[in-house]
Each structure stands twice: as structure tokens, then as C-alpha cells.
Length: 85
Ligand SMILES: [Zn+2]
Image (cartoon, rainbow, N blue to C red; front, side):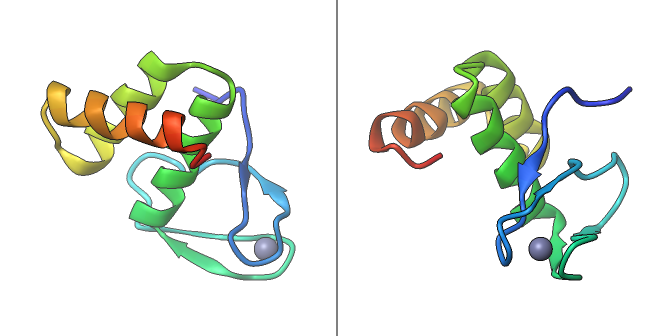
């Protein structure tokens, strides 16, 4: 299923498609920067936070890290309040 948002390359800031399930890394088509799955996943978490889709951000964070619900909620709300997105 296609995601309805893009993430930002950490190197060149290009808007790129999010990582596909099962892929270990994501290469930026613009500059070739390779982001590890964790790094790319955190970009997706931030993309959800930017859209105020905190429930999605929490869910993505949990799938990414295996964190429990409370930890994921705390982490995402901290990112939200700190403007880390
Ligand atoms: Zn790039």
C-alpha cells in the first residue's frame, strides 16, 4: 500500500518516497545517500508528526523499534513538544 507522504533525505533534503516494508535501507534517488532502516523510519515518524498524525507516528515508532505503547507515546510526544520534526 502506498504511503500518502514523503520523507526528507537527511543529506540533500529532497522529498523522497518512504522506505518499503522489508527493506533494510533506503537510497535517495537525488543524491544517492543511503539511510539505514532506522534512520529512514524515524523520518517517517517525523513526517507523521508534521501532519499532526500522532497516532500514526506512535504506531510507526513501535513497528520500527518494538517499543511498548507507553514508551512510544512518551517518545513521540516529547518529539512533538520539542519541535523535533
Ligand atoms: Zn538526497
